[in-house]
Image (cartoon, rainbow, N blue to C red; front, side, top):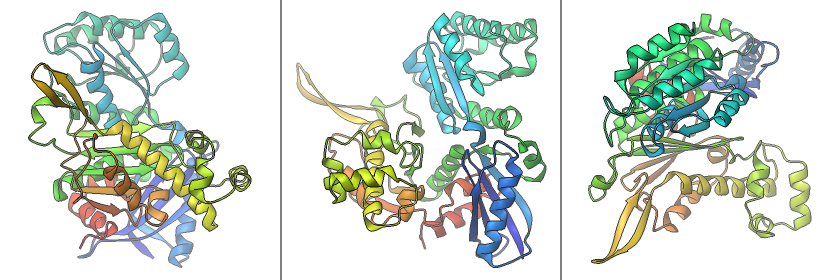
Length: 453
């Protein structure tokens, strides 16, 4: 069987291979294969097992393909630390860019780096360090100080400088002095002027640095030889899908509830009423909730329920709940197990939305009560996409969103006419990397998965 494209998602625990036919009037998803990721030995073993699983689903013994693409979060994903001048300015801009690119932020510092920060960086051992600080031709000392402190640590870690452009020559000199020029990447200032976030150049370089330096899982170098596009972080690929859908459908939000994290991606302009208050908010925003997951982190989510309320919601006794949690797996089989995962998914979704969506704050002034918007305004979102195993495979998960939108009048949530769609083929992550080469085909595949005619 000859297939046009295979897309591999090489995760820390699971490797997925999705097959597509794209060189046709009606591009379509063929099927998927799944296997455990063999990080400790050679990721190619897990990749081949996933391809063998795909063969079974496609009822074929021979399988060839014209192109292969890949995303990865193997070896723990993309760990990043961010160091800027003022938290609400350069630090926030750098953090938004890193999250947009699919990074997991492990440390954020503002101002001059302290000794305890250096110890934490060493313990984290990040894949990328981002240094920012100062608007263009504004404050310059902090970024230089932080760069020198980081270089004195002697770590062989890529450092991306995204601060005041006045420092470029001196930053290059510092890296040359320490014999680390090969680890330096310089991009346009992520915060060139007040209330302007310039995150796209940094985002692009994070992708490039990820591919060049990051993926150290055994055998990953062989994957580079067979792929036809840059290997990108899996969450970054989901954001790419979200962004290309926004170009074709309108303001949009994607919610991805996984086993370990819950990610929310939104690409939306604010309402005209709130625009003047929210100039510093980026068009595209991603938040990652590392404590919210329905499998690896399910115990964190269970602990969020007040005593006895989870059992009542599931419709079981406390004893039955304890028994289910004692034998918990990420694939629910019985009706009661599905209700349990549904409640955990709802808790993950609602908590993640609390943290992602902006608020309408009521303040009292001398001229009376005023409403001040704060954070990301999603009132103009026209489409919400549900992806991730739980939201896609469980029934009636659209209600989880409807309940949240109806019960949070002080949040800047979409209105009642918003369309909630499921990523039925579960291909958001695969199609994102595919869209870098085939944007029009990617849109067609996504529309089919979302059942948009």
